[in-house]
Image (cartoon, rainbow, N blue to C red):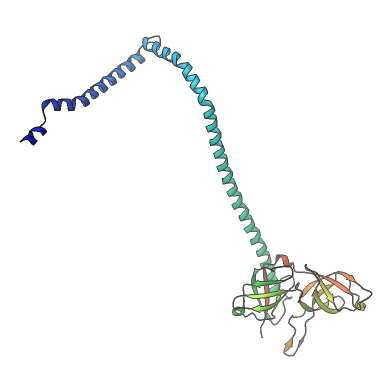
Length: 299
């Protein structure tokens, strides 16, 4: 058939097909043998031999090109080294900054832990001490929200009616009076601080037995004043002010008697007023409060 006869291979086609690879292998083998021979001769001949002379001549001829190439490549190499060093320096800076941030965060956490531990130990000492008022149980609660502004002296604590807290429960710290509960939810409660403008506490000067009402002064800050104190009571500097308190039958004041409030820091006698102007510095540092003690009545 014509189709089968046209596709039939001839000896000449087989020869041309395999002659190319065989030739390349032969040439490769010859080059390998020649290379081995030259290497052997090179290492066996003396330094003044023909192959050594050819190598020296070639090096001499190529030397100018090598020097020129080195000079051309030197600025690029310097640039590469500079960029590599810059990248390494930035990476090292980022690593050191990350380590510094972690160390700073650990330091802050450590300082907070130390402060909380100090407050906790002071609270435990106060609760177990003789100054703790009778008829109450202590409920320690963490402050979860600080005052929204200097004119709204309220904080929110992480305890509420589910823990037995009720409206008007007194709130103290190991240092003294903090305020009272004014709003209660199941697991939270709002505490109005003693520094709020609406706060008023019946108070007593331990040293003179002079009675008055502790209120917040006008404007921002923690300035307290003992009002309604007659000039004849002779209240002086550094006198200690505590809650007056009272108890009659089943009735009693919101604040139990004897809770420390502050110390007299100044006394004035306005000529147009019947009462002395007594300024009181509170014992409690309201700016650093992290936890408080709610006094829950046992009955």
